[in-house]
Length: 247
Ligand SMILES: Nc1ncnc2c1ncn2[C@@H]1O[C@H](COP(=O)(O)OP(=O)(O)OP(=O)(O)O)[C@@H](O)[C@H]1O
Image (cartoon, rainbow, N blue to C red; front, top):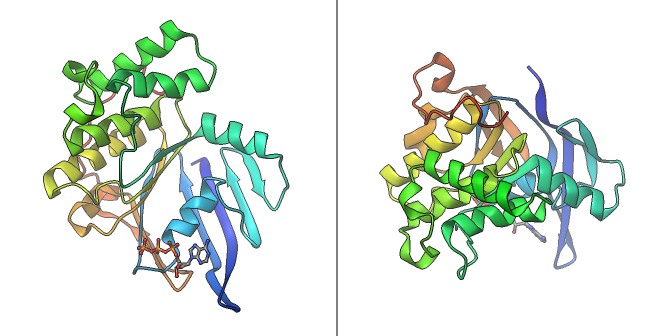
């Protein structure tokens, strides 16, 4: 299977109060196209740092990182090239949806397409298609303040998918949601994986681990376990995207 994310022996050291702390210490991880991987670990173990590095939002001190065939580190690319990669190849979902409050659900998704240079009409069609697929066809014109937390997070997933990314990076996307709504969001991400997107999710939520193909555990900046999740046995549910989706 094609790897959409390869992290190889990555280290990251932060200085704090004159002390050097190795937050990542030779961590390696791959995510293949079509695979949904959970990243678990205790608080402070380096999960978010690893995700930021995978998203070219932070730079490792050592090791290599390749996303969608582009070696990001240790190569030195101009920030403009990293920005273009983030826009085109990576979708981000965070704990909070962080929608633009004065734009409707559809406009929030369209914005991601505009920023990537899509014409207005195409952006509008794409936003409508995605939000309808994600169960928000009736909420296209709603402002974020009129949507529930779960609905806002579904808009955030649609926004992350807008530019047909190869990779989705999600940092605790269900932390602010109750169990059922959190699971819904993970099922949407699973649906994206089924269309060929590689999905890496930082999660503390053990209740939905059955949706993941692999579960990777990190402790003290090192990967301590990398094993099959129960979805690998074919037991997971997922939203079905249309055949034209993600092509
Ligand atoms: N920019 C920074 N400067 C200094 N220390 C940092 C920086 N970013 C992260 N750290 C430290 O690195 C360690 C790992 O942080 P990280 O956010 O990656 O952990 P985490 O596993 O995501 O934790 P949590 O589950 O609590 O979100 C923490 O001790 C944190 O304080």
